[in-house]
Every structure is written in structure tokens, then in C-alpha cells.
Length: 234
Image 1 (cartoon, one colour):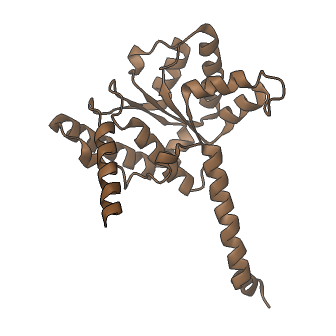
Image 2: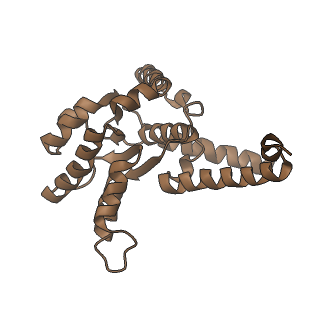
Image 3: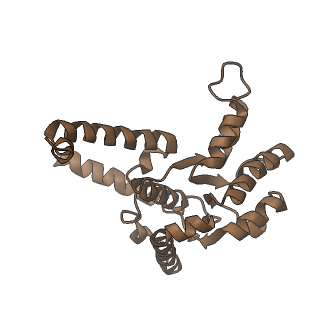
């Protein structure tokens, strides 16, 4: 009975599947990707939903940039290069794309943390409460050290000296360690109200990618409702 016989034994394969499922579930819990986007990948990203000709051209360019980025991710990771997905228009697809990138990278075994910027600040404040499972330093270490950090809706929070200092602490540490950070935002880097120390690091370590100035959120919701009604009637 060889080692090869053991690892190919039906019982070993069965428990291997369980462990693999547990590992995937553990990565999903850590990543904290919204349930709505947990199955989304670049291949299933709806680029055909945009109506304006300018938006169609722009989203096709975005998809090509993201595809190239993922194809060359080892090189991007070594350099600590992330993405800054930006559009002034809410519902333009930035969060869907960021979640798709997160899912692609997790499928490759990467450790990914996905969080709305305001939620990061709330998590930090929650550590101050008695009985908290985390200390502030432990939470910040987790944010600093995760392989890929995705910060959704960056810049939407009210910016104070404390907010500037906390994000600088996290992003500077990631910058020094060459950790990949991916952002979505409604503000271009040149418009951001964040401290120049933060912005200069993002300009150096992120490719700024312009999304269409067109909201497709409502249209996607309408299509999902129509698909659900169709399935109920069949």
C-alpha cells in the first residue's frame, strides 16, 4: 500500500474535498466579499450592459487592462502594484469589477481582504470596546499584512486627522512591504481630499483606471428580476 495508493484512496479523496471546501469557505469569510458578488469573475462581468457608445469603449478598455493585470499578476505583486478603479458615477461597475478580481485571486490561493473604507474605520473603532475579539494593533496588522487588500468606496468617508493617520498607517506599511492594494473610488487621485502622503503612495503604486460615467446598477437589478420571474414561470 504505497503513498500514491493512500492519496488516491476514495476515503482520502473524500476528506480532501472536505478540507478543500473548508479552505475555500475560510478564504471567503476572511475576504468578506458581499454575497451578491461571490460568484463574480472577469469572465462573468457584464460589459455588454452599458448603453452609451463612450461607455462601451471605456468598459472594453477597462476589461482589457484588468485582464492584462491578472495575466501578469506575479510581476505586479512583486512590484506591489495595485489598481485604482475610479468613476464619479455610482453604480458604474467598479465594485463588481473589484469583487471579480478578488474572486480570481482567491481561486489562485491568494489571501484577499475586501472591505468598504468606512467599514475599516468602524472595525478599528470597534476594537476600543471592552470585550472586543481584536485589539486595534492586531486588526491593523491584519490589514497591513494580507496579500491583497481591496478598499471599496475609498474617499466617501468623512476625512479627519484621525482618519488620515489610520489610513496612512495601513497604506504606508503596505507600500513599504510591496503589498497589493486595490481601490474603488468616486474621486480621481488628483481630486482626493486625503493627505498628500497617502495620495503620493497611491500614485506610485496603483494604476488609475477610469470607469464609464454611466450607472448600470438599476438595469442589472431589472434584468435579474426578469430572469427570476422567467424561472418561476417555467
